[in-house]
Length: 98
Image: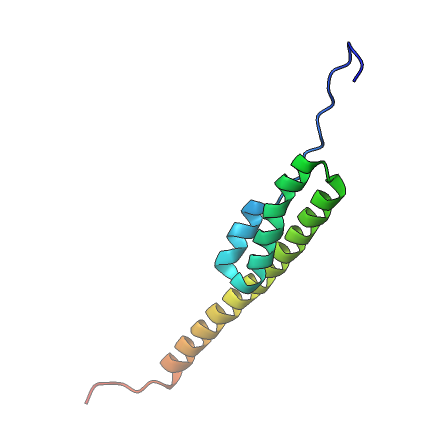
């Protein structure tokens, strides 16, 4: 390092941990690899492996997005089914007055 020049900061890479934690509530089987990859980003940055940290962050983002998409679709389908069954039950229901 030459005198008079400030030390350069390493690039910050978002580890996507927040998105991975949110994804675990929607579809946990795919959120687990997302959390594992997100937890690898900071140690790789500290070691100076920027390419490895970028790859781990990309994997974390991929698994998180997939878990979020599948989880949201599953929630929407279950809500639609519950509403459809409720409406169907009301339409075919019998009066309980005798």
